[in-house]
Length: 271
Image (cartoon, rainbow, N blue to C red; front, side, top):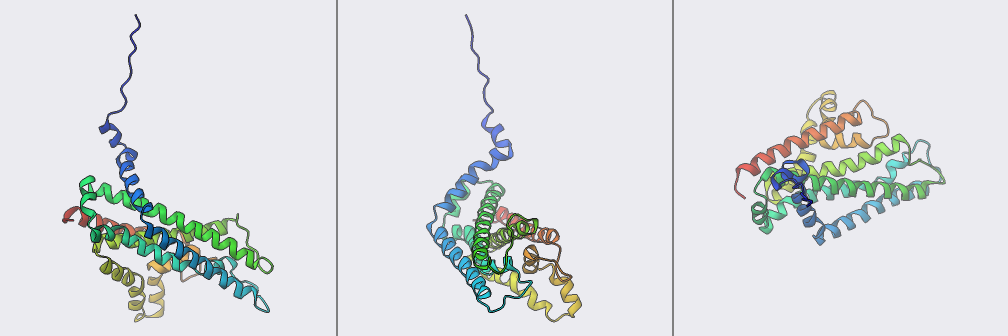
């Protein structure tokens, strides 16, 4: 008589002990929330159309000139309208967390996932992934349309290290803006307060630095979020901007500080 034995699979506790098992169920839940919110798709769609259209119009104005000057940044021209999409990504990052507070859904969310660090990590992962993918799609679409318009005058190959770096840099700005908005939304919990904080974080430092001497202002301004983001997509870094990798590190560090502060407050205060 043959006895067939089966090896039991890993226990639920063991599955949750792995990073994938720890986050996967919450990530699926957060992704479901994001993709089933119709306003998210409408906003992303409208912002994407506006961003791409502005870039195309800017390229058209260059192509229609009597004489197209040498040295025009064709890729930069095609990305002209992406600022709109990046701002929308920042606002969307705010709403991902503040919308739960204003809608009252934060309470069932915390009941379903009482480990608040786990919840915040899943939200960050979903927000970052969606923002980067959205930004990369817009950057490539704008580039292709811009090239179709400027091709008779200017040509930039897609599969070069510089072009790929700048397109990925544009997508990284979307990611950074979304996480910046998310971090400020986690800290403020209210949409209006988070949006005010977002505007202050992006604009106020430059205004404050305007009272300093030019050399000091240039040295400090390189580390501001907007200037660091600008360095990610520059064709050639100059003395007033950081190297793209350094700029990426600065943005990551600034966002990490805000997210850590948000995680601490989320863990300590009531919903």
